[in-house]
Length: 506
Image (tube, rainbow, N blue to C red):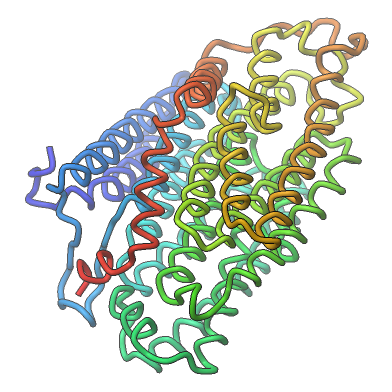
């Protein structure tokens, strides 16, 4: 398959997704009919099915050592733009394409009565292509272009219900904060170019790792963490996410928490770990501080939320804090645990937001007090939602338990006061987080149904099918964690052993 058009395999996930994004827009523009909305969803799903296939093929090829790791277009390095992939890149691409496929299938029924669906599906596909582009970028210019495309498409999708004030307000807030973050990133890249004379990631990494630390190096480090931290939704750059989730269609909420904030995390960790060795620059203490503040603030605010989607948004911020805490350990085991939780959280939170969307779609409210006992009327959705919430709470044998356990265990493995403190913070806050997950389960399952849910019935199988697949994956990974942990481990190994990435890019 990779020989088609003589293009390297690693170009396929981006090109196929983008081409189907164009196709679905054109079909929606020129074809009008009763089943057009379903046709657009079907075309988008087929496109993403191909994308998932090519990403998996790339993972297998890289394991066999046969993947063309580096692809240059035009001028060779260190000037030309390029794509370079490793297991970390492919882990992010797999999450983006697979969750995107589930969201697209779900949207066929969820969005069927909305207008401008050609724009919706096209923007969704370009969002996924942009996230994959960020993950595959081999130079900072390519990374920035795809990063901005990720921003523009997600701003537009948050504001999809443009006839309402809330989505427009949320999108504008997201746009302003995203633009400030992008300006900070661009300034950091300009400093990097001024110091190194190149934007090629491998050459930049080689420069900083070979040169003695200097004041501008620390400035760049802080700018990169702050700039990428906006999309990653770390405190105090998190507020856009809280407004964006309730305003966006539920499938897009799943993509924001499951994929977009992971794109920001990826860019932050790729540049931080690769450019600035933790043994020299000691950025682990800065990340640990950010993680602790993020974890405590998100948990405290989440517990008092009545809006279901806002509660899940704060839950996402809490989990981002856990992931950053894992990265702050600076060890291969810590990085592997953090990457494993990125994959697990993407699946669990995607399922949680789509289940919340089914409830919203059915009764038209996000208020927990108005959805009492609804799971008794929608038992399949209720069970799937409970699996997502229990997984997020870290209940065994679900996948969330395994990644949370590994984060805590990797901190304990430092065998010092710093590690024990981080492990205690992660453990205590994980236990605390079960309170608001349990609250949601209690409301939808144990409380007596109110009048507003009296005539509720189970959702369409088209919406339930992707939810069931995600729930099944949560159970399978919980029982057989190697399914995803092997990929996370190889990704962490690539990050720590940076010389192989540098050598491939030079």
